[in-house]
Image (cartoon, rainbow, N blue to C red; front, side, top):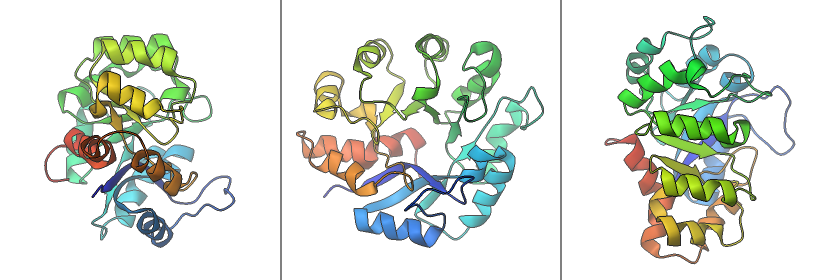
Length: 249
């Protein structure tokens, strides 16, 4: 049996409400149950659309009694004083039971470069403490991705929001670097999952749904109906993310 562990879920009110979406935990858990998702990594909408420190705090308060929902913090580089110093991040994550972080650097979000000068200290700390980082692939350019992967070769990177026309850039990166994974919700390439598994192995893919904006059912179907082995499906659906997070998740 394939069990699903979703690494890409948002909760909380939106700046611009989305038709058919939701913002509360009860609705999220109902959608997860309907799709067969047992656990999810969750970040707060205000951490992305308002202020990470505020949204991160609210997230911990919301999830205090939730066993199946794991908190994910949104982080920023600290030089502008908007976020805590990088050296303090690992302790605060551990104190709040947070095992992974997200970065939203695009122009529509916090608008900063994924460049060593800007995020080098942040990535150095996260890399040293083996904290997985989820980053929106569509918001960064190829040169920045290449440089970060080159300079931080043991950083646990998960690329979200990859497009269906990405393989010509993606394959050279997968071939050169082994320290990153692709979140599957928007990787809607015809037989793309099968091709990645065949060439690079199933360990390079992690399951995500994009809830509440996208459909959890379609995200699950992409994995359950892929023409790959059951063991590969189990890796993608849950095991790979569990390995990235470490024991006790």
